[in-house]
Amino acid sequence: MERDLDVVVVGAGFGGMYALHHLRELGFGVRVFERGSDVGGTWYWNRYPGARCDVESVEYSYSFSPELQQEWTWSQRYPTQPEMLAYAEHVADRFDLRRDITFDTSVTSAAYDEQHDLWLVQTDRGERVAARFLVLATGVLSAARVPEFPGLARFHGETHHTSRWPAEGVDVTGKRVAVIGTGSSGIQVVPHLAAQAAHLTVFQRTANYSISAVNEPLTPEQVLQVREQYPALREKARRSFTGTTVPIHRQSALAVTEDERRAQFEARWQLGGFAFLGSFDDIMTDLDANGLAAAFVRDKIRAIVRDPAVADLLVPTDHPIGSKRICVDTDYFAAFNRPDVTLVSVRDRPIEEITETGLRVGEDQHELDVLVFATGFDAMTGSFVRVDVRGRGGLTLADKWAAGARTYLGLQVAGFPNLFTMTGPGSPAVLSNMFLAIEQHVDWIGRLLVHLRRHGLDVVEATAEAEDAWTAHVDEVADRTLYKQARSWYLGSNVPGKPRVFLPYAGGVGRYRKTCDAVAADGYRGFILGRSDDRSAAAV
Image (cartoon, rainbow, N blue to C red):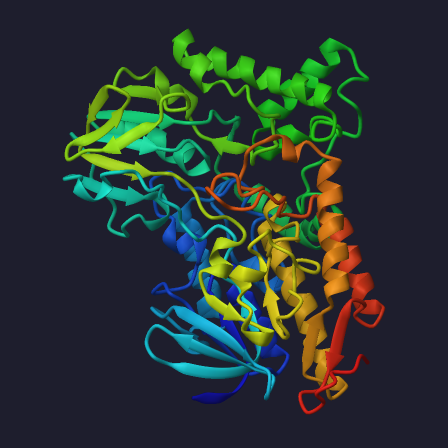
């Protein structure tokens, strides 16, 4: 057993990569385990055609290194998966990260040794390591979910999940293809498969709002301008609500004339992407204001889709716009104007079974050669609990969260000393720019570990009282918004049997950062800091 480690990090996506770099720079011994064959995390696994970031490239990137910002050139407004993966590989090369990463290795269990205050980590390759601290950088959208359709094993054709797309690609030329699911992945992959397949059938349970990306190449002048302004842009993003520099129009949608409102909506629609939700500052808090924004987007969908019956199915009517993560697309709705694309609603008539040659919906048999599951993830908690993590008294993280995820600041869990849940439930990560969320968490963890080292301490644990208070605060903040009015993965609604608890923090990036900084400035309020040779773990 390797015992000379300060920190074990699970996952070599962008979170794990920065954790390795930063903690190593602070003088800690760090080792990373990654189940993939290289770095990149989400952008390593999600190789499906059309996979693209929905935050602009110049913001969805690291800010910790001014040199890195100046030397990397993004090619377009919204980067594709290959470009994001190339960026991850460049970062790994530039900062010599791979020498401390063990690839093709999954962490199967991690148990807290209360006698020695160490985390004992076991991998699927039989390796055991001990470390003082454990950082789960497993990704909040990495535990893929495939519904247990009856008969799936007997299907004679190909099956693929968008998050496990073969690196060599999938040739669907001349084939009958089904896409099951119309969330973000489905919306991105449909236009590409439609252009290749003999026929594409899209099976939709829930229609989703989607805004055109209005993607375009970045000019050399745009790249230069961003590079010159990076310090100011990053600081503005850190203080913002979403972790981006996209402005929110500080006016109520109900306080302007119909013409003024439509002009603002149209301007944001032409800008594209998440900017639309910033058309007015009450879209996510006032149902009437939200309804006006939703009606505008529904009209846009109907203007694109020529068949009124198909448009009726594609128009969302069961949730406020933005209460489920809004999608950003390129030609998604236009794909349904093709004669070789069919939309099938499975909302009222679900998929009954997978057969040897396709699938059955009610009495209708659909003959297929390829099944593509764009069915999403056990989001925010799935990647954490699929590792057998055991804290004090052998309590598993899965059991701790059986009635709903609970954390303090999204960073620690009471009863699990020296464990950090990066960008986990209770943090604003999935409602924001993930790169800034990652950097803020890693920087905060780094400062805490340095504080412990400086004071001769090596144990930190959130108190149950702090965890209770933060969990209640997360829920209370969500109640001020419209998020809970949708059946979404924010609430775990896409996973049968998962507790319905609102998981991310909806109070905004800037406010969250201030809270975390205030906790640290107040002697890490809500945490117990102690020494491994002091069983009382007295607060300092």
